[in-house]
Image 1 (cartoon, rainbow, N blue to C red):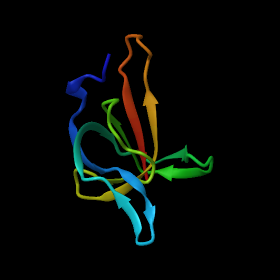
Image 2 (cartoon, helix red, strand yellow; image 1 turned 135 degrees about the horizontal axis):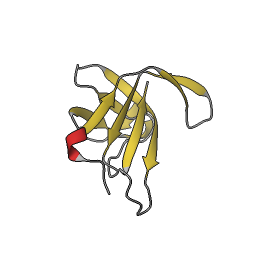
Image 3 (cartoon, helix red, strand yellow; image 1 turned 180 degrees about the vertical axis):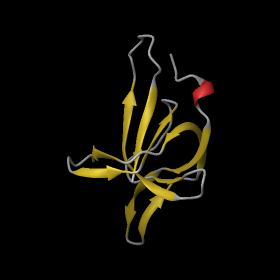
Amino acid sequence: MTIPGWLLRHNITIEAFEGSGAYGDYYAEPVTVRCYLDQQTRLVKAPDGTDTTSSSTVYCPLNTTAPPGSRVTLPDGRQTKVIAALRRDGGGLPTPDHLEVQLE
């Protein structure tokens, strides 16, 4: 079961992080994604295990690509980066499967 479409009230733009080179970071082409945006500050763990502050969390369809370091543009035009993307997959159970993306 996927996250219900009626919950996906917001649109964000994600530029998936693809790596770093001699001239800086590079990203995939921007993709608009329907999601649910929760603008709430909270303490989260970064992929390297450090504690960091997240200003927002977005809940997207499970097939969304948003690795840590990706650039995200929120509906109000603010740009931020992905701290962590967590798969919430019930493995066939009747749960709202989704990708939880924690933003700086």
